[in-house]
Image 1: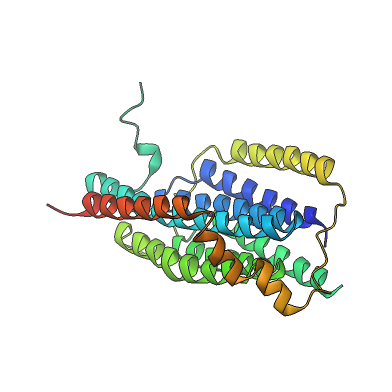
Image 2: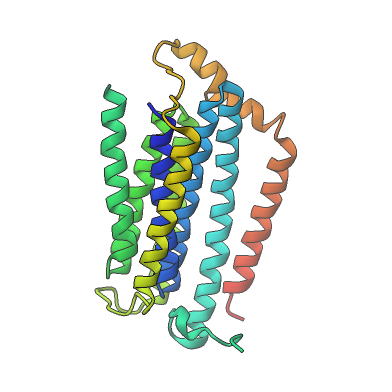
Length: 102
Length: 171
């Protein structure tokens, strides 16, 4: 297997995630797009680790586990924030959250 | 080349499902398509001989994070169904940005890695594979080389949990 198979699939998922972050205005859907981006990075970590030999493969897997943990924390806090926005404004439309706009 | 066929199927399914995640008009469907993406990515980890990461992917992502997402959808949406207001009006510019980014990334990746092959693990015995990059090796690494980052991550997870509870609590 070519390493580029995995890396380019990672790039595709990453770009789809970037599109989702930019184009969606529902807060929950933006968080889902961020999950796509994190998964793309995880594929890259495991594939590149596997390319460099056993020690790097283990390192890549460990870093992937860290990223999964961070993703779980991020979703927890992110959804709490979205829930607060919903409670205060009765919608999760991120275009309406412009209090800090100058 | 059975592994290449498997990769092709998985990559196709992952890409189509990911596209549906960012284009579907139903929030619950987006979450369910996300399950497909996460499961195929887990299968890709198996293809790369990273079975522990694959198990974690299924357990944490599909088991925990997706349930969190479904709860979030449930709590922020009184009516579950098709919704036209999920995209903002910069969809075209977002599409152009995504395609441009994909072009740049693909060019750089092809330029940097060309047709470099992943090491062929087919000839390695299962015992050797498990010992050098399997679950046991990953566990050893976490609790020796990466012990400090592991503890830091656990404290961070605790802080995030407390923060989420503080934010979401009604008082």
